[in-house]
Length: 314
Ligand SMILES: [Zn+2]
Image 1 (tube, rainbow, N blue to C red):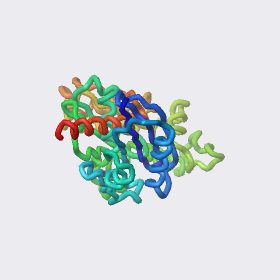
Image 2: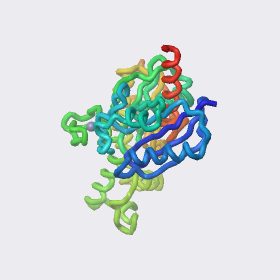
Image 3: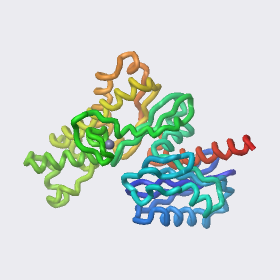
Image 4: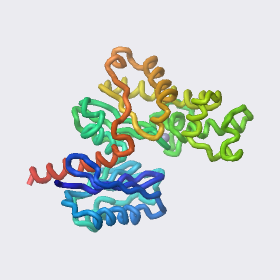
């Protein structure tokens, strides 16, 4: 069976996998991202190549950042700035002499969900990746829409917080894991009582979004408020997406999905209040099936799709 080697380059980790043309993952590898992400990427690809006699169709790379997928250039990656301006497609194709596809990570994840996950049931949907930042990918009539879909940088407050992108009041400055952690720390600094204060032996600057969600489930009122407020902001963003795209579904993935009972519920309630009623009544807001693997499976799907297109156009 044909196979693809794929990688997902995020701000925190680089993951790579060997994936078959039916979307099964044969082997997965993960390394923390370093200052030399391309060297790490090639090390992971070399490991997979040396351990398998793969019938390789190509290499698919999903990257957190703005990508020109036609040329395969990383235009702007806020969390992995060493990749800015690099033509990853050309470099990788020269090194391995294979078909290479480079795509934004959330776009790849949306394509992965459409191919092998929850998205199989929907022709038109918007995927949101909820983690350190907020990413988006859009599927229309079953196809990946070739647009930036930087949904995390929709401004929900025109005089709001400054964002790393240069805009103010971006959705991700209010609704991401980074926002949840920042807001919790700010509350504790103000002196508000919280069980989080004692976390990490009092060094509460180390708390994670997961710690905060756990504290919220334990009834800590600072944690509950912070997680619920982030969810409400997410719902404000989701309402705009529903009004613009009238999708059949909003599919959610990423590290914050574990906080479904408070964060996502607050988001759904807020979206229900704000979106046009007729459009809201037709949308399903559902979790992804592929979770962390969506980007890699999608990158593989894009490799097989492109290989088919180039063989039929020849
Ligand atoms: Zn922004």
